[in-house]
Image 1 (cartoon, helix red, strand yellow):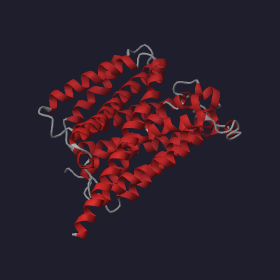
Image 2 (cartoon, rainbow, N blue to C red; image 1 turned 135 degrees about the vertical axis):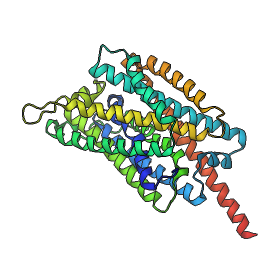
Image 3 (cartoon, rainbow, N blue to C red; image 1 turned 90 degrees about the horizontal axis):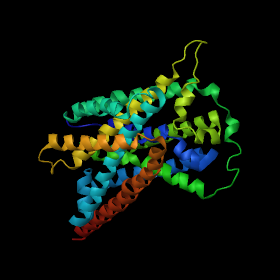
Image 4 (cartoon, helix red, strand yellow; image 1 turned 90 degrees about the vertical axis):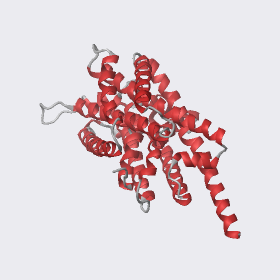
Length: 363
């Protein structure tokens, strides 16, 4: 079975779009302050429009293979260059997923555990999945994303009593300044990681409801992210939230049920480990899909790829301060590789195919 449905594709989008923005919230709050949630809402609106735009072009041109989109829109040399940038961004996001996950485990729960040790337990299981076909990926995503959604809803419910809505006031109390837009741009870079799932479009068997289901997934994504920003800011206030590395972990430690059950950290660990593992797997599998025709030996490629990822991720995750600085630049890379370049390429593809069809109609 090498096919997925548009409903399945919803879960692929959710699996790659939410986890980063939801985990290192303080990267954005440190710039946007108490109005970060509003920046995320505006960025979410742009993200929804852009996702629907990409899907519409794919449906109108009847081209769902990202390789065909790039090579039909541009001369061969430019197509290779821009597709190479896209693949490089996928690789960067795979490194980010591994590095942040290892850093979270090392920083929050197992301080004495070396980062490289945590990375082994993150990267090694992925080798099994990469050797399997799409059906295994689909089952893994279905189970994992449903787990994340239920986990997120329970976390939201159990932390409501620890939040004070007054921490959001006054809204836009300092006016709209450059930091508001900078925050929005960085968050938009995080949202644009939905493009990680786009290579899987070619496996969808029926496209009638693709736009509708993509819209649903984008709205759910924006809702999860905005609620996370609001939750953290209302729980700690903008200043404190901006100075905690993983604020949802600290918030999870407040959870107490019936006066004796304290298990909040479990929600954050499940969210982080499962979420970033999904993102790492889908980033890598997307690279394999794009390079499918060019890989002579898949096993060797995966071995080299995994080793490089391990080395770079280990280096990045050793220092929280250094990692958080890098994460800001990764959002800019995402914005360029996953939003600006695809917008240009897909638009050109649409125009060229539309003009070609008009020319054939006149004939």
